[in-house]
Amino acid sequence: MKESRLMLIQYATAVAAVALVSVHLIMQGVIYPYATAISFNNILSVYKNGFYAIFLEALLVVVLVHGFNGVRIILQEIRQTKPWSQMVDAGTVVAIIVTVAYGTRTVILAVFGAVSPA
Amino acid sequence: MTHVKLTVQRFDPFRDAKPRMVEYAIPPREGMTVLDALLYARDYLDHSIALRFSCRQASCGSCGMKINGRPRLACYTQVAELGGDKVVAQPMDNFAIIKDLVTDLESFFARHKEMMPHLIRADTGEMENPSAEYLMKPEELEKMLQFTYCIKCGLCTSSCPTVATDPDFPGPQALAQAYRYAMDPRDEGGEKRLELVDGTHGVWRCHFAGSCSYVCPKGVDPALGIQLLKRHVMSGKAPHEEGAKVFAASVPQK
Image (cartoon, rainbow over all chains, first blue to last red; front, side, top):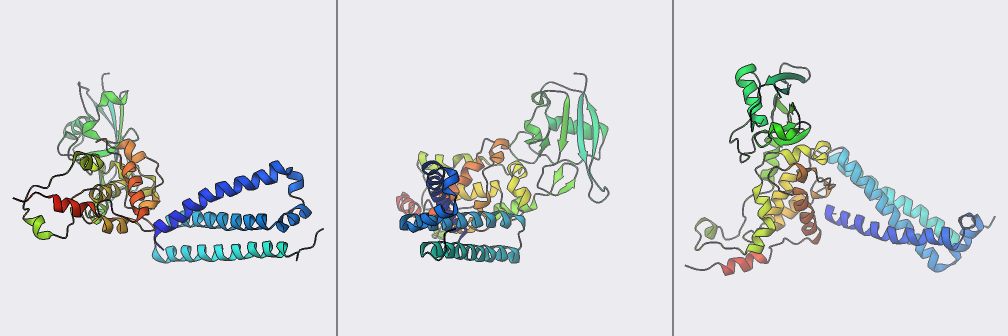
């Protein structure tokens, strides 16, 4: 993929992350008091709301893509060899896939009630 | 002020293990530039000082060096404007030192050349034997005019933090020139240049520190050129892809 496409993804996810993280923080810290919001049972109940489950999945993807792509950019500047460049690119793709898959697994388990309340 | 304390960084890679600072006392005179002081030191105090210079009027870009910590042209910097009697002359950063204040600009010019700093057109016959004068509108000229003032002194590249850490980054001078030619309404090679700079170590590695624009002695704003270049790279369209065709059609016939 061209670097300009990767940078477009970086900018788009940055804008999306600002919006999503803002809504997330408002919901977790303002609408619900913070201490209540992070209780295990409350978190599980949040996933029962289909809209919020999709919202959290979107937040997961946006933040991970933005974060790992950002790390990729920093690592690309450290060395200039082709093997290093390819390794960093491949590592970024793997890291995104693995972490998104693991996060999605958590979301799915919570949505379908596979995690028991405390 | 009885004397100007001129400190010169001396280093011969074939003889010295590390650079050393040598101080010279220069009798001041009105309007004395740092280049004048250096030439006085070389002519009357130490013939072995190596420095590069030519035009003495900020046109050739040969005497770029770090003066009191900031990249400047020695011929364009008066001792009086430095605000004291101490002048420290060092070679430009981000370039290998050939000797003392002379740096190796080979990679710098190679980067410049990579950007194809010339007009590219399909009608080579017309280019070699133009049938009429090639005219352009003032507003078209304005988009690229400041970038044509570049004298290739290397000061912008020596001040660039990205060049310092990423040797494959083309640098502000080369990227600003890529923009300059891509914006030329007579040019049809914009797309090639956009592809050239759209790599892992290309235009996107500019973090917009802006030091290149800060140190340019000719008032060019390479940082601006790079950001504008990014916009065209992002859209994937050369600024004059269509414009050049229109321009070619508008060339008045004899």
